[in-house]
Amino acid sequence: MIQSMTGFGKHVIQLPSKKITVEIKSLNSKSLDLNARIPSTFKTKELALRKIISSALVRGKVDFALYVEITGGETPANVNEAVVEQYMEQLDAIASGDRLKLLEMALRLPDAMKTEREDVSASEYEAIQEAVKIALTEIKSFRVAEGKALEEDFTLRIETLKSLLNAIEKIDPERHTALRERLGKAVADLKVEVDANRFEQELMYYLEKYDITEEKVRLENHLKYFTTTLQSADSNGKKLGFISQEIGREINTIGSKANYAAMQQLVVQMKDELEKIKEQMLNVL
Image 1 (cartoon, rainbow, N blue to C red):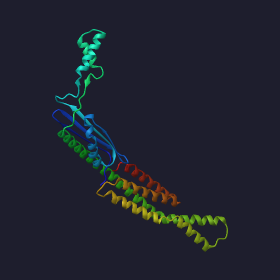
Image 2 (spheres, rainbow, N blue to C red):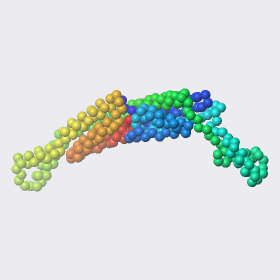
Image 3 (tube, rainbow, N blue to C red):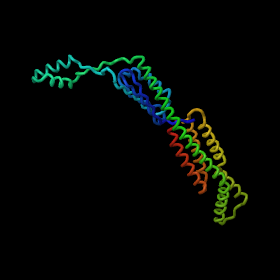
Image 4 (cartoon, rainbow, N blue to C red):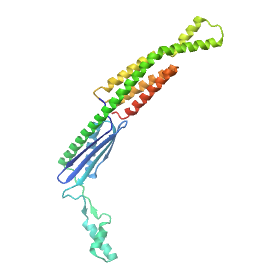
């Protein structure tokens, strides 16, 4: 069962004096690219939270955000009284004025407010961990749902490739006949005596160079292997990508050997289907 790398998860927890929101979203990427945006108060826990997210999501461009809203009696910043008082004295010495106005001006100056950094309590961190795990559960469900849609699309396109391969197999004898007739006509146009046995030997050698039996067998096996891997228990995006490359290699070889318009048209259709598979493959975990 494949999974998409696209997903979104969110969970909100309400603590006695804080509202904490956890958001995790992911997009496709060749490897895990985790970007964390959290308040400075929780920076000491960033590494641990990164490990939880990394082990759960494995791959993708992941954005993790932690928002904290003070809802209780706590205040994130306090007035630095000593500094403000010095500012007011200096301002009053420059230009005497109403103390309320001096206070307003002093509060706008640097270091008028001080922020005391608090350690994250064990219970608060446990709540955040739980919120992260719930958000990860949501994002995984999102990825599974997206993966089912991708699986349906892949299955349909693989079946289309199988049908096109069957069409190639059906017209292959016709292609051989057309190649033989074309070569016979070319020799006849030369209007020279040709040894029939020698001509037949050269013709067989020529036709063997354009034989696609091995390519057809390998392509059929690759298509079966793709379907088997698609239905495996794990999401094997990289493995499916490698199989897609092998499928493309056989299709290209058939196209280069075709030398027959009807078959080349089928090859073009196969390339189109495979290109769509490769585009979608970028989203698979």
